[in-house]
Image (tube, rainbow, N blue to C red; front, side, top):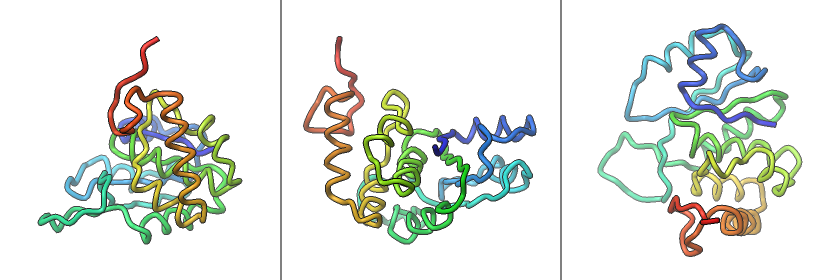
Length: 177
């Protein structure tokens, strides 16, 4: 299983000198618009056997902007992550909050290992904590050769288990009852 972490949780584990849930490798997804001291601590840490720093903002649509510093998720970035993590046994993925980018990437890494989306949705994805970035999922599913079927299954899973508004998986409104 791939572990999903927030930057704060990774920082705490590094300060304690312990590996994050036994993960030996870390995908460190970073905001391109912010330079955080925590990134330096992660990079200098000897807690992990390997760290892959990736600059990628939490953008959910392919769009053009006047902000040249924003990095939209793309095939090259997602492909690099999947290639790097492919043969590593224990992997943790973090982004700022551990909610969107990291959960999408963790799902893709885990899915590539056995192509069992039902298992990934049950074991890696926690619908109460995670809101995977749909653009990253779309790109990853395409790279793994399972788009659009995997995206349809993911959306169906959300509609059946979490979301009140069936027309939008972007709104956080838990079902009543």
